[in-house]
Image 1 (cartoon, rainbow, N blue to C red):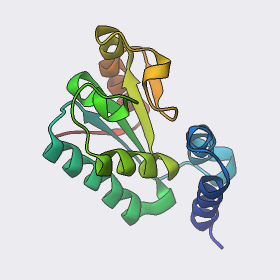
Image 2 (cartoon, helix red, strand yellow):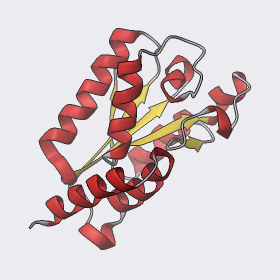
Image 3 (cartoon, rainbow, N blue to C red):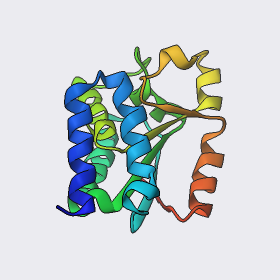
Image 4 (cartoon, helix red, strand yellow):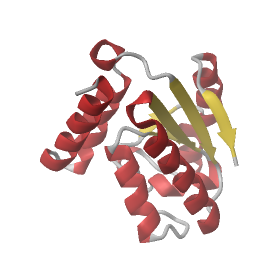
Length: 158
């Protein structure tokens, strides 16, 4: 069994045995821990900044396609800013179809990191309790995009 297969099986086991709120913390730590499985060859961050339903579906399909292609040899981050933040809202203020909500949760369970822009959250008067448990709050979404690029992440904007 390869390291890639071991990582995927551990993430699947965690998904099956944990509540969704705990999955992201465990899965994210496992996916990013180079001591356990080595650094992935590929790292990519998506800027997610629109609330359009077609946009949501296309970007999340792309994230899933890369995860299917590279498996455990990629770490993906979706940084939600501006109108895109609603995919991470427990009670979004803009329409987010249930299928999109399910896809976001599924991707998180497989180790995709979702970052929520703290500035956008402040503008909506949202706190930690207003976003999904697996989302990580970053102070400034644009800074998150820049910092991840400085750490070797490629950048995608739709």
